[in-house]
Length: 262
Image 1 (spheres, helix red, strand yellow):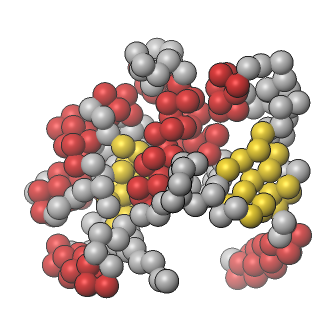
Image 2: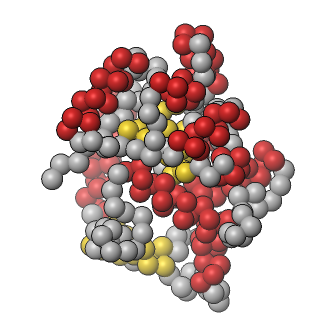
């Protein structure tokens, strides 16, 4: 069976009428399918939206469309207090790309206030400057520490381990953003899981209670993730993807073509 979703990139690329037409067409073939849109990534984008549309990007979108849990607002970095609270209430997912946002110098998402308002988020990579979920979660917390000059910013009274809180939230938000039954080991969900190396220096002699903290916040040596299963199939074994040799050859060929054209 085919699964559908749309990603109209940003408000700079679509008009109100074209976005509405796109959503109407999507709902005709797949009601409730995911909608991803880049928004408020840079201050220049916010300024341009105010100049042309008379509103900040996130507020403009919330005012004109039924933004709900099917939506993923990628970046949403530059939101004011009103937008932060409104986005959290909408149930939409904030698609945070921390390594990309840091690499481009775009800014820091107000994660503390957003989580206080019970907002949902997922993490991913936009420019692919980094493709490690541990780095995304680490930078999510470290960005808040730097901005607020505090420690353990994203802990909560009932979730004192920052890594555990962020990991669980990112799983839930990521699953919602994809519109698929993933992100949990339960009946009806796709069988995805990772196997950890308990002998890794970051995990050795520790109890499982602190494993996630060590995985996210320690950067010593190779990854402590040993095997990866997706859909019940082992795709990574002993830290090597089953198609690694072929994929690396394809990557080298594509890179050579691109550099030749530069």
